[in-house]
Image (cartoon, rainbow, N blue to C red):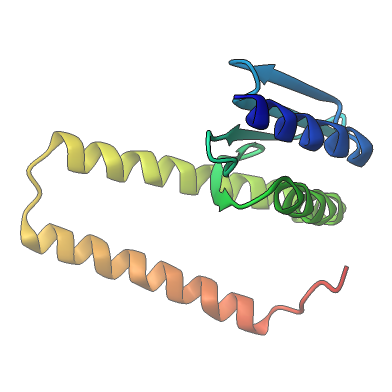
Length: 154
């Protein structure tokens, strides 16, 4: 527990240096919530756990939830968040940013709808095949858009 708390403190200090507006420690150095107020209308929030083996599990919960998985050390967590915040600052300047947030909200709703579908209904093989084909088509569309869209070099 002492190691986890110490590692969490290292991340806490580094995130404050990156501009975190608040960092809350929950459950005695095991769970942290870090918020970055990038503007009046954009708050990027992360939740990370420090495990007994000093591994880290990181999720971004706002402006949309997404898991970023396991990290081996505090430096990796801080480096990921540093890069992520830089990307959000840049993206926030785009006139398409509100549409991006609407799209991510739709993806979150889709994920919840699929989960409810599978947990609450007995789905036929044909319907599963149809759903899988449509999701595959959506992923292909995203890949195509990515290929013809210019990369941001920041």
